[in-house]
Image 1: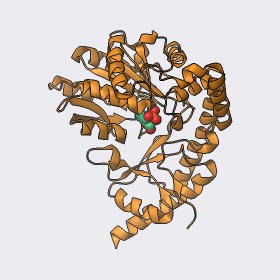
Image 2 (image 1 turned 180 degrees about the vertical axis):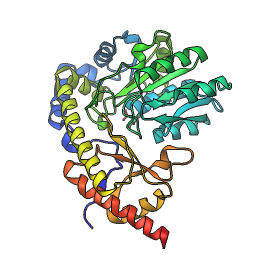
Image 3 (image 1 turned 90 degrees about the vertical axis):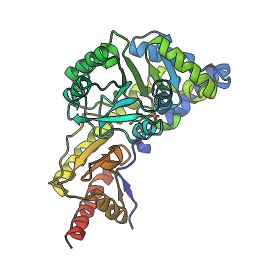
Length: 366
Ligand SMILES: Cc1ncc(COP(=O)(O)O)c(C=O)c1O
């Protein structure tokens, strides 16, 4: 069988990773700061990178903690804030790892519908009026994983109002913010917040590469100090070599070039993917994303995504079932990632997907 084409991987294909730039950045890190690169350092992260992040977000350095990927930042925040049985609001659908992490902590996970302009704030307001008292609401505002949708400015403001009134933390999980290839950039909720309700996480996984495992948290200084203690007790300090390399990469301007490369490639892939879907699977529904890695595709009601998934395996094409991002429902949905496929694989990949859908339908009808 021909090589498998993966619309499953939420990671960049190698052709859009600046390997040479990273090698140069690592060499510069060793040459310019051998002591900083080779020492333990402290739990707050590599100091020059921490300062760079604080400047990017216009906050004090005491509000920043640099971690081993933003997953680590998420885990620290959940460990600090979420106890067994605590209600936590997430989007429906949401990132599968967040769902797993919260469920493993015994949180009472409440999913609130996601619309093409973000979480349904009216539905959330209704739940709050009915007495729901969440510890936090986890929201992926830009090019959401898995749906690719973006939270509108109005809803960002409304969410902050609700959080202030009902005293819950808004966890703004924003690894895709810089990968916008269409439309207008919106302000982060972190920048709109004047009441200390937002804890913000982002990452260099999507702009540099995931292998560096560098992400970060920004939030109220006291909360960051509390999480820093947890970080110290967990690992003394995060990976200084990786963080120093990322700092050199950012500081030299390589980051801006890398982001431009990624955006250009992903914009082209979305164009190819939507054209191929319109041609091969005309009854599939989707909203074309303005950035990020993912697109959510709904097949007609009654299509069994489990069966499509099994057929797809045999045909050499992969995707993630929509059901993985939900507690229930979504049996006719899937997440297509266009980050890990190269442009020349997309037409063939969608042709195989359409064959898989057709085969699953024929089997069901037989
Ligand atoms: C919404 C969201 N949060 C967090 C992460 C994890 O990012 P990192 O590689 O920085 O741990 C991802 C990665 O796919 C993601 O989609």
